[in-house]
Image 1 (cartoon, rainbow, N blue to C red):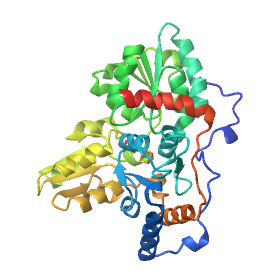
Image 2 (image 1 turned 90 degrees about the vertical axis):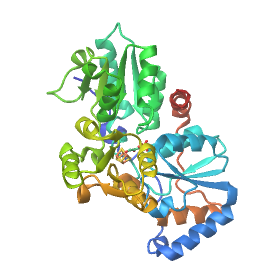
Image 3 (image 1 turned 180 degrees about the horizontal axis):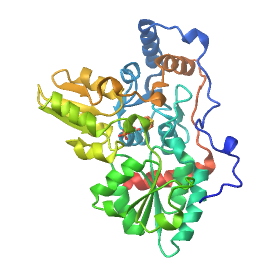
Image 4 (image 1 turned 90 degrees about the horizontal axis):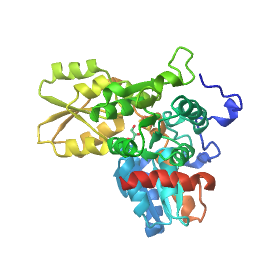
Length: 377
Ligand code: 13P
Ligand code: SF4
């Protein structure tokens, strides 16, 4: 059992890493869509090549419509790496904006329009906790080389920690390649924070008999010695948006729509992934629907904004939310309100930078190593 005697839990661990970001001024709170769109477009026109907007597939329609590029986490990190603009306005959550800051040049500025866009899953594996657990697990397996892999959905300090221990970052589109990289270098993997993506990846690699789930603070759970017997140790994190999907939902869809296919994100539970026809990152989900023949039916097991975008983008395909009304939006992604976008852009026009995401220099260098290892696999 891990003890955290030195950590001040209230101050050293926090869900919102950037709670110093600024709130929307009152005059921006009541903008109607037509006025806001006009003002966003005018500000973008004024900023020209100095600003680029990157948007994750889960962003609201009003953000996606203004984005220069919309994609999955991996594509967004590549776009950020290639961006020339002085300002990268990030429609996404804090860990994604941090990654953009790490990857872009020092003279580029990353802006996350609104605060509190913090992915709860990223908060489930704080570097401080992982550091304490790492001491236990490495002591429990002194003859093994354990490689830590963190999902992109984690903060920069954890990415830096992984790099410092020979590990790397992965996204949902390359987790299997990250595991292969790790098993070439070492003999065990500690995967953080998403246990479902970890388990689904282990199955994909035929390593399903080598998994142990680990919550180092669970008094009823396995201890470090027990989990260290397995080759793949999965941190006990998860995404509540994706955990909501159950195998029953797929059965119900297949009963009601016998001709429907099902595509789900690998953050879903194992049994959901097994029952689906296609599994993949948000860009795989987009491609699957884009490549469908007119009249095909696809049920989508991921965040509801993306399902709604797919209905708009591909009216010739019948796009169904996998669990109907019960499908969730991502509360973190939703924090990027278009009024905030209007505000940060107009402030930039006036020469003021608002809500800048800046990773601490001591974390930046190592976190970049972890991201570069991913970009190279
Ligand atoms: P993608 O990398 O597939 O875009 O997923 C990111 C994410 O947060 C899913 O919940
Ligand atoms: Fe995090 Fe889940 Fe939202 Fe993705 S959908 S950003 S994993 S909370």
